[in-house]
Structures are given as C-alpha cells and as structure tokens.
Length: 184
Image (cartoon, rainbow, N blue to C red; front, side, top):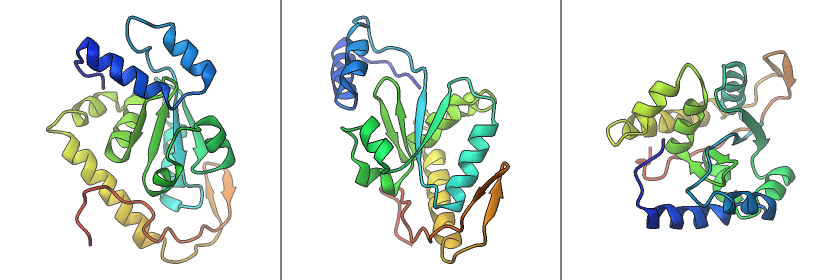
C-alpha cells in the first residue's frame, strides 16, 4: 500500500498523520525521522448495529491476520477518546480504518487496508490499491453500501455470529455511502 513519495511529500504526510494521534503516539512518530514508521496495528471503526458490518467484522476476526485488527464501535466514546482528531461524523457514513501510525483510510481505501492486513488477501489488496484496481474496490464498497440499505430496511431477529449473540439491529437507512458514487 506504500507509494513512492518524495521526501517533502513524506514529511507533509507525516505531519498530517500526527494530527490524528495522541501526544504519546505523536512522540513515537517523531522518533522515526527516516520516514513514517511501519503499520503494526489497524483499528476498524465499525457499526455494531449493522448486520453487514457485524458479518464482515466476524469474517475479519476469523481470518489469519498479518497486521492485528482491532474493532471499535464507530462514533463511540472509546473511538472519540482514542482518535480525537478524527471526523467521527464522516466515519458514521463509511468504513473507516485508523493505523497505529495515524494514517486514516475511508471507503474503498479502508476496505483495501482491511484486506492488506489479512494473510490470504494481501496479494489482492496490492492489486486493488493500484489505479487499475481501485475502481473495483470502490465498486465493492458501493455494493456493500447498497446491501446495507436493502437488508437494513427492517429489524431482524437476534443473530448469533461466531458464537456471539447480538440484539436485533436498527435499520442502516443508507448510512454507508461511497463518495462520488451515483445516486440510486
């Protein structure tokens, strides 16, 4: 997922990343003057009230991970405390992933970041991260958004995912959208 950056671009990116970090995380980042540190953990902000989000969270948890994934309810008190510089309102509308380095991905890029963390799907993530592959990732994110709209129209009975019981979710009502996607 890394791209070829000039040293000025890398420096700008590093300072942008630092704005999403706590002071301890920012000081750790400052210690790596030779460029951004490697990603060692990803936090996925998910909607526990959405069946699709819960299903995908269960799938991600059950997959072999090269980079550990943590799951935090979107716009929760924990999310706001851990990521004070994040636009939590925007995170409600689309999948959002935050790296321990402060990088933030939304929508298709967040979907690719999740795949990149998985042992079995990292090669696919590398292909989807290219200019040719990103439209496919956008289409997958758009399809997930539309699936949420269709399946979230009514309340479903309590569901058991991966041995965990969840109450019936509230309808998604189109909360997940892909920026730039055509209106349907």
